[in-house]
Amino acid sequence: MRICVVTGSRADWALLEWPVKLMKADPFFKVEVLRVWNHSLSEAFLAVERIEADMVMVLGDRFEILGAATAAHLRRIPIAHIGGGDVTEGSYDDAMRDAISRMSSIHFVTSTSAMARLTDLGYRNVHLVGSPGIDFIRHADWFKGRPITEPYVVVSYHAETIDGTVDLDAVHKAINGREAVWITPNPDHGSDRIPKGNTFEHGEFLNLIKHCEEFIGNSSSMLYEAPELGVKTRMIGKRQRGRTIPMGDGHASERIIKVLKYASY
Image (cartoon, rainbow, N blue to C red; front, side, top):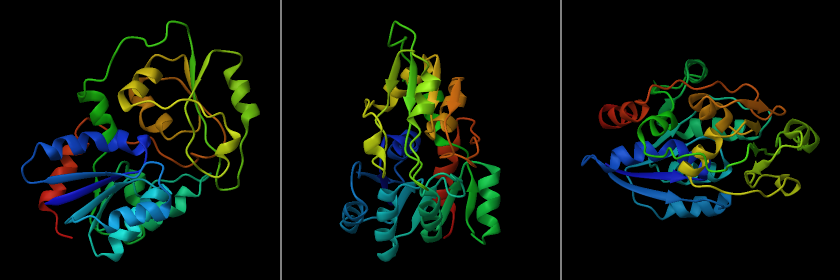
C-alpha cells in the first residue's frame, strides 16, 4: 500500500510519528510523509494534488489538514482519519474536523465518546484504537533529564477562534510571576496578540512539560499528552471544552496498521 501521511504541525506529528515508524518497518507499506507545516489551506491542497498514493492518512482538525483532505477527496484517494468525533467547542476546528470525517473512508477514534458520536451520525468503518501519541510516550527514546535547572511553568495558549477571545490576563494570573516558557501559538486568527514563544521538537516538548511545575493554557496536548506524563495542568477558557481525554495503552498504532491491512472501504 502506498500511503501518504500528511502532517500539518508539531501537534499532529506527535500522534503520527509512532504509527509512521511502524509502517515504515512493515514491507506491506510504502510510506511518504508530506509536511505542510505553516502552509495555508490552499497550499496544503496543492501539495496533495501532486502526490501518488493508494491512501492518505490525516489527523485532527486543522485548516491545513482540511485542505489536504479536500484534495484527496476530489482525487478519489481514500482517506484514513485519526481523531474524528472529538469536540472543541471554543474553536472553529470543530467544523473542520467534522468536514474531514465526512470525506474519510476509515475512522480511527481515540475515545468511546468519539466513536459514539461518529456512529450516531451514520459513519461506518469506525475503529476505536486509542491515542497513538501515547504509543510514542511509552515506547520511543525521548526521555532526558530536567532541561531547565530553575522551577518553571509551560504556557501553550491559543486564540479561541470560535469568537476571537484572547484572555492573556487569565494566563498571566495563572503564571503568577513564575518563570514561564511560552510555546509559539498556532497561526490562527488572533495569534498575533499572543507572545510568540518557542518551538520544540516532539521529544524536547515532552521533556519540557514532563519537568514543569504546571502546564498552562488551552492546548490539546494538555489532554493528549500531559495526563500520560502525570503533568499538572491549568486549562484557560473554552477552546478545548467538550474534548475527552483519549484512551491509550501503547498499542494504538498496531491497531491502526491491522485495520489498514485488512479493512474493506
